[in-house]
Length: 90
Image (cartoon, one colour):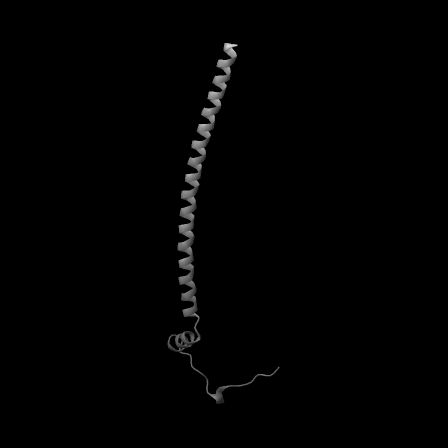
């Protein structure tokens, strides 16, 4: 009977040790994943800021007055006179 009691005690001790190791491992995994989540959230925030800047820059470059100004200064374009306009009919 004494051998059965010692065997039961050893089995319970092994179960407690395995359970403790599982708890430590799970907490470690949880902390590792939390750090990774924090890094990804920070990266997301940085990308959102950059995206906002790029949208603002695109809006600035696509503004009709700016396009007109660039066409006139860099490309030498101008608004045609009314007598220079011709209608083409098909």
